[in-house]
Image 1 (cartoon, rainbow, N blue to C red):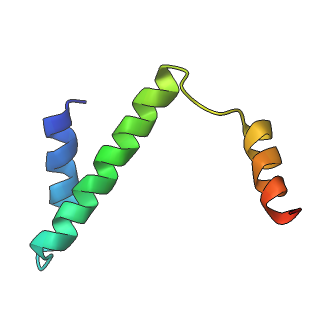
Image 2 (cartoon, rainbow, N blue to C red; image 1 turned 90 degrees about the horizontal axis):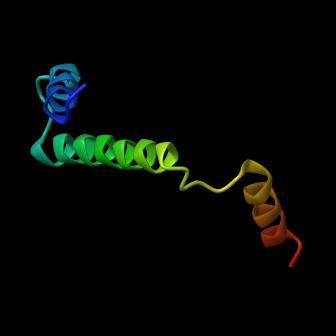
Length: 61
């Protein structure tokens, strides 16, 4: 699906009374998800076990 189609679908799902700020926020979230998907596809991710160890270290200090 193209970016334009993703945006159209997102806008179509927004309520009629949405503010510009809220609409922009929704599109920013959509863009962030798109970037995350691209990073995951490129293998630019942190393994789950590494994340768990990192989070556990926050609470053991």
